[in-house]
Length: 219
Length: 389
Image (cartoon, rainbow over all chains, first blue to last red; front, side, top):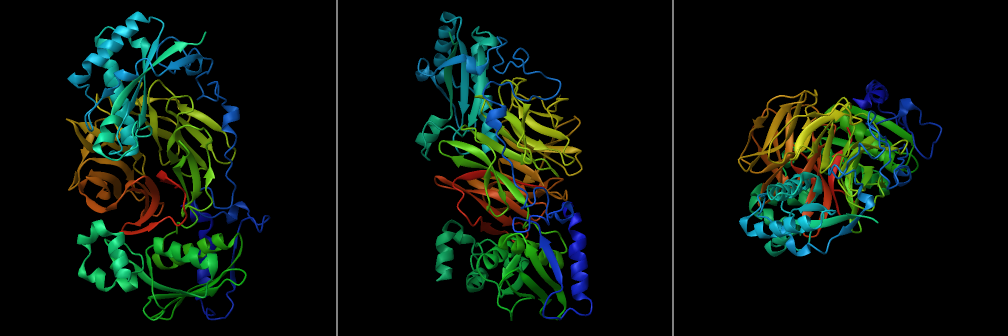
């Protein structure tokens, strides 16, 4: 495929090597490898291997500089990152994450736990979600983020989707309790943010969870 | 000694070790217990030293060769690397000379890689993979970043320095570009990252989940999982994020899309009636069809081979196993313990994650022989490898 540039070199080399005078002591075919010790030789026709070739430098760039926390970086054509159309929190309030203070403590005891590989809110967890709904009614300016997580017994991207499904299940239950959709946002950590780093059911049951974070606009 | 070591190393698989593999263990070096050595081509390598020798042997073992003595080999590779690498490859039986070459420039490693690829071309008649690249998720303190390295793990370069979770890297076929998920906004968003210019652009950052990007073989479209519609569903867009099209609309969570090589079909993980399964859907939209993976449970993380014939995936049956199934579906084959497989461009080798307690490493699997070679250098905890194609 991408080796096609290089293939003729190989084929010629093999053909020459195998045709007649193949038994000389010194191989006549020299393949030049572009790279650091021969900086001038790495013309495009010598590029070998798919894609990066092992000899071209990888430029990590400085993404932090061109995308510096303000969420005003390059966006797909057709969209503008002026803030209004980029409602990352999905709240309809044009709230940008960096404009909000996070309160992880107030609702920390209300975390919702899930059964293995399930995203249904168990009846045992309903009272916690109901108390969160009551809290939101008393705090009309607060926005809620639900962070969904999984235990490690799933593959990574599967868990990232399952964690989101869990957060959304809690959100759906809150909406049935009268919380408006524009006040609840979701975030999945998959298995990347375990509450307990252990490798047994005691740890796993603590990691299959939805946590509540209260977001308030910075003053 | 080696037999005992094999037993220790592969204790959990001990029951699978056959009498044949035990008696032949002396010849087989570190070949894993489940491997089928009859699918490996015996070759001898002589005359090389140091890094060239090590690199060459690693490359050839990954490429489906078995290193044996000159007398028992089918092919003899002789040469030297006093300065540049020189090589002569002969068929031991017919005495035919298959390769006579000298390499210049580059480094000892790249010369060895180039020779390994020439040997593969001369014997397997397919392009080698020794000079390909991988991307992966690497642990960095409490965070994870995206790295790019040679296929054997050497020369790792951190692509991101986001100090947050970065995950799910995937290559744009035919380009020096990687897409991945970064939580740098506080939420999982998909970015594209040009390896030449270092420029990064947002591809998808809708409310909720944006992850699991996979780029079409022509490099123009992206399949991904977004939850902006209320549930994690499968979408496709142009590579810049425009022209978004929703392909699935279920209450359950979809994950891990991959493309057929002709770009017509996307295979992904779905869940119906609480059961995980692989599904396919036309990439332009259409009906979800279940892809049978008989003999395995809980399939996730499919990857479609570049030759179109085989889908490799992870099955969860107690632990994780790397499995293959014909791309039309059917009876699956369980290969080795591991997860998150990604095909090499040769449609023969797979890179995957091997998970031990508190440790994840990258490993290379020769699918026909089931031989496993761990990446030879310590990259720390890493996972989610993606092979550049």
